Length: 88
Image (cartoon, rainbow, N blue to C red):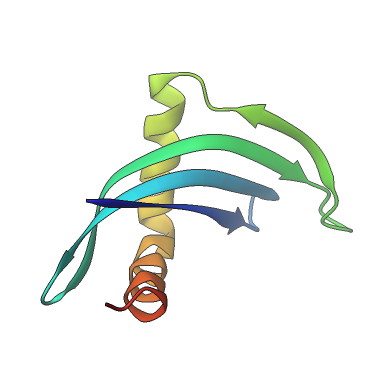
């Protein structure tokens, strides 16, 4: 199992979610197995400047962000990026 640090820009909610993703390589591609949200940075809607950053400290908060990451479609893009960028 390997790990990568990444982030997701949630433009609907003006925030950037930083997380780590553990993944496994298969012949058919990459599978993300564990997601751990670490912090959320809130962005100014007009300028996209960082307003404040908070850590993700509770299990409920992590679960909520993981569900939102799955619903966003971002994880499929991350899997494709890993396959392309880190091809063995």
